Length: 292
Image (cartoon, helix red, strand yellow):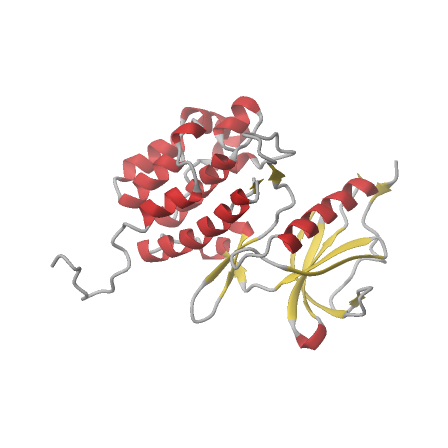
């Protein structure tokens, strides 16, 4: 089987260019991220439009496996058009590289998580993420990789959140559960540990971890204890216990999302939103509520 490893001569660099079979030229700018799969660069494409270009070139993996993974993510992003999901503008193979040309966002949610958010901001970000997750669920897809690094933000008159990286998403096709190829141990739902499967409620568990982090400025899990310690916390329901102990409206909602048995969590993203939208976080200082 043909193995695929990074060829430094073929890999794009800042100042270089990629040309799509469609005839578009993409000028490569600064590198935005790097990983085992390859790298992400900012780029300028047709009509001087800014994009992000994601280039797949993992080391020591079968060529066909990498190509299948790239096509799967490209197809999902191209097919799943939603205001809170990053869109793909172009994709092509060139010089041994698999290329995705994506909507350019300003930064990830992870870069903002240095302190607790206001309740108003937490609810607004959750509103947009739940909207996207409900759309995926309606299309029989479980994201499986919901963490702050995969939530991208666009600054403007209003903050816009965009879900990215559907590379390990699973398609349900009416099934109750699927076995994911991989889920990062820091965001594994209990059912992944217990039975090796995920459901639509697994995405809600991962969003519950993110809700807790935005609300408190801290992780719901202690990552200093190593893999076995993290697994034990998930099995023991430590994240839910921490959320309940907050004794706040947002903590109470997070605690339901973080229940160990998926059947006892919310049934859908829409149901989570119904509880969030009832919270009194929208009125501005000095504005009285209708009951005053």
